[in-house]
Amino acid sequence: MLDILKEKIVNWSSDAADIFHNNLPRDNYNNHDGNYIWEHTVDGIYLTRRNNACFLGFDGIIYKLTNLFYDNDWKMNTMLYELCVTKSVRMDIPVECSYIEFAGVNLQYSITHRPNYQLGDDYNKDLFLGKVDTEYFLMFIDDATQMLSIIKEVSKENNYLCPSVGFTVFHRNRDSMGYFWLDLKKWALPYDNLIDRQFTDLEDVSLYAKHNIVNIDTNKIFDYARQKWNTIR
Image (tube, rainbow, N blue to C red; front, top):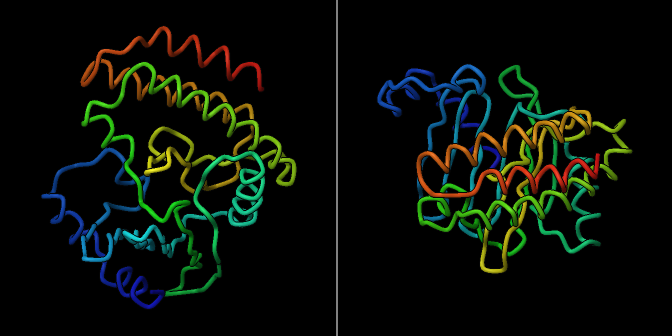
């Protein structure tokens, strides 16, 4: 798989990505080193952009080759997973990780798998299938509160720096056994800042849902989040 992901990175270009997206502008283009190109196969999905390629296998095994990592990411995610197991919190399971230099860029090659070997359904699918309501967000807040407490405990080993990527409704999937968290990235954010970001992300996502898709009680959601998250600062 490593050689295939290398080939995907070599073959990616901004021109090809623009064509893939019909030359439509995207707000996050510059922040994420260009647009993804994705390819569906019999066995899974490839996602590729500059210096990044991953394969999401339909068997729940995820292969990534990326330059978007911090030195402690794998160590911290592994420690996080081990503590989550003791508290019956489900998340992506770290399998192996190595580091290579390819085309003059330092890359991390990692393998993880989903807890029930299913990719699971994400927030966007739940939203458009009509499964997102006020209770959905309240349940997310409960799950996030538990995970935040675990992250805080684990972050002691990382100078209390926490993941800055991967802790929103978009990084929590649902399989046949329930919800689980995807792997977290860029452990460089102070814990209090992570809490602040949780409020901001929750507000953005829930208000979008309210004004575009579903009728939800955002006041109830925000009040509940403040009650739960301010107590674990």
